[in-house]
Amino acid sequence: MNNQIRIVGTGSYLPEKVLTNFDLAKMVDTSDEWILTRTGVRERRIAEKDICTSDLAKEAALKALEMARMSPQEIELIVLGTVTPDTQCPAGANWLQAKLEAHQAVTFDVTAACSGFVFALSVAEQYLKAGTYQNALVVASEVLSRVVNWQERETCILFGDGAGAVVLKKNSSAGGTILSTHIFSDGTNGEKLLVPGGGSKVTPISHETVNQELHYLKMIEASSTLKVAVHRFSDACRAALKFNGLDISQVDLIIPHQANIRIMEGMAKRLNVPMEKVYVTIHKYGNISGATVPVALDEAVRNGTIHEGSMVLLTAFGGGLTWASSLIRW
Image (tube, rainbow, N blue to C red; front, side, top):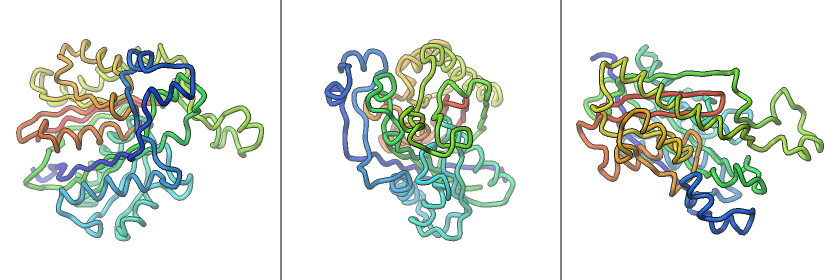
């Protein structure tokens, strides 16, 4: 009981600008039907040019703090999951800290692609369990529109921008209790989804690297990655269930990373659960990398899908490769 960590506030923020499949059809050789049947995406949100990752993160964080009835100045730890920080240095979490005026908080980023939120949640949870901090703000925020090649049909149809956040407290009497969190990695397949340029491998940025489009998000062997994702989503879910001695039938809601509707359907089939138990937002927001899980979580909390007594299973799969899960009892 002394190490019980609860989610006491959730928040999310999506940019106002909507980019529909019909808009994309004017930019690349595609159609609404083609995108919808292959991905499940109808539209996605796009940040304005003067908006960056920490701006979206701030709005989501403030909503989570409001629900938690806390001020930014009370937060002791901020962990941001992102692959599109404002700058490579300093960390995106540092920019967020400054904008929240949470100067007392320790801040850093976690990079785990689409599993970023659950990885960040796991990191913050351990700090609280150890007694280092009593509360934490965990955020996932992405402006993927800045690293997408809008002339490449296979990737530009998938991604959007947005942010989600949760506030964690140790030994709170309300909120969702984190029963366990599980994180996994496979670096041998890291080339399946990556941004080749901008790191120490391809540096410095030059006319040549820009001309070679090395600074855009690349997806290699998408069909094989889809199959791996279905298995890893399912594996992560089963790890959480096994650890807690539970059966999938005892889970009320699964909130997966919104990568592709086919992946979610494949996961549901492998777990033998109806799609009615899977919370889907991909049609509205597309793939927002690590932010999809907390955005969906916040939406489900606020619309009443998640309520007292709900058993909720978060699961994610992303580049790296990474996969993760977290089981929460509301």
